[in-house]
Image (tube, helix red, strand yellow):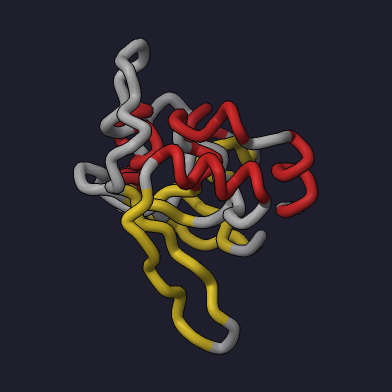
Length: 147
């Protein structure tokens, strides 16, 4: 197994990893669509993981269990959210429905950068990466919370 892949964790390069290891990180939700990764064998270019073409979108938890064009059940409480705690491990809260999370996002009580999960996903993903919530996340929320 060739180890030519690197990932960025808190803006620090980590690696090298094999493609199989990187695919496992993606599947577990440790690497998201927009997380920067590098394949050293292709040069010194960091790109979002989804742009590399070796990680199919359904491999990412953010792309699992969503079928474009199918209606979304907004009332079933099936989503869990991680809530950061000062000097402690994050707490899992929920279950919440899509409607409840959208209301929390709109009211500013929930951040698009919080992690979420539901049965059927292979790992945690950011709320901002799930299609169910795109419509109620503003560009101001995205630009002001993450640099």
